[in-house]
Length: 570
Ligand SMILES: *[C@@H]1O[C@H](CO)[C@@H](O)[C@H](O)[C@H]1NC(C)=O
Ligand SMILES: *[C@@H]1O[C@H](CO)[C@@H](O)[C@H](O)[C@H]1NC(C)=O
Ligand SMILES: *[C@@H]1O[C@H](CO)[C@@H](O)[C@H](O)[C@H]1NC(C)=O
Ligand SMILES: *[C@@H]1O[C@H](CO)[C@@H](O)[C@H](O)[C@H]1NC(C)=O
Ligand SMILES: *[C@@H]1O[C@H](CO)[C@@H](O)[C@H](O)[C@H]1NC(C)=O
Image (cartoon, rainbow, N blue to C red):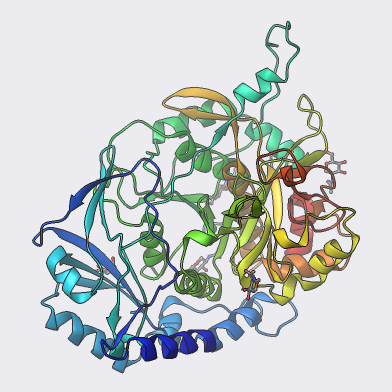
């Protein structure tokens, strides 16, 4: 907050004559992969803008989240309703009045708000948008069937709006793309040169996951009030028929559901995507017999920022699933600080309501960014680096042909945020890692004072998925491990609800507290293997390595359901 005021002051001095303010001076403009420009929009063409209005009481919200999420606190589990969150954070009437007057002055009336009143989404003509946001100039970008309007130039706001708006969405950021990794190629390469491809192949199926994490056929949902969701922001369709086929092939041996209860968002016809299938098929395999929602945005030809759309939805629906599995991420350095800080507050709002949000840690290890000739740093990913989500890394079986101990998967995303300071719940765990790790990457590569991730992990290699009615092997990525862990958390919620207890909510304070005590068998500690970072094979080839207790490749390790349940049943 202080920093933001300081910047404002500097900018205001610099631009005193114009009395303008740039909310996101550090937001880079990068055309997303696969997008190309079709030139400037005509003034009458319509586009959609999202205004993030400044909230009140963010400090109180921060303390409240700490209290309701910490098992040591008297307020543990005393979550707020959406209406109570609204009463706490809704913008002041001055902020609302100023913003509405400003929009009206520019003839903008087609707007809708969310329940918490801190987001406003408006349909605006390009001409009006350019007058509203001096500096912005809207161009059309297309990618296949998709089309969006974006401004390659930064926008500014009237100075009087500086204290009322956090950022304006729909200008610079492109929808993030994320593809699952198929390891078929690497797996084949690793085989003996003259050998024939073996016809046997373990591959991860629901039975394998359930066996490894000690789920018996009794460990399925049994409470009407437990619920879970996965959110996908790709141009990928989710197909009920694939889920039914998957459960038919792989769902033997445990009671489960074969259909989702609610698909939220746009879904038109098209062929199914592997990632869209993966999430829901494995969420419903560990979180078996639990009511499941899918958030989807496939088929919106005028794509906005689908991730932002999901965030708005969280603030606009009072009865949401308790657990959300999200496989999505952007490089921290591709986003403005104002945007990330505000998204972080959105996660706090969800935490205050008792909602658990789990993000995939990413599939590029520590990542790699060139900062000057020959100089590199690691590249943290957001929202994986948010201190208010639970981040899930990846592992593989030490012996790929047996349900055996796990080692870290070299793709498992992990590292330290350059934006968010380390939250207190993980300080002891990370300090332990940093002081005992046998070989750390050079200190110039990462920021040891930042939020460290992931928090825990699960298998991320060699999954079977049904897509377009066909079983597909060798699917890999932390977008596989995240729904596996999310389903297990939903199952623990299910047992808590049956015992009349509130759901777990934001998990990290309880998770680190449990593990910090030592000799916990709630998670299998993964202690072997390193993840990748910069691609050339010198010193930069390697990021962090797994180690006893917490580490920035696999977090605390992978779930052992019966023990984790015992520890978290409360
Ligand atoms: C929020 O929900 C209300 C009521 O369902 C709806 O009218 C409004 O358009 C929604 N807001 C957004 C931004 O979608
Ligand atoms: C979990 O399963 C492993 C082997 O699959 C077994 O060694 C262990 O005892 C089990 N743990 C619990 C708590 O059931
Ligand atoms: C599945 O869940 C429902 C509640 O949603 C419960 O009534 C039913 O008994 C469960 N089935 C099994 C096999 O546990
Ligand atoms: C489920 O939730 C409803 C509404 O919140 C509540 O009235 C009911 O008692 C809950 N049922 C169980 C079994 O927890
Ligand atoms: C390191 O992280 C802290 C907060 O976690 C931040 O204030 C600082 O700017 C970061 N340093 C770099 C070099 O990014």
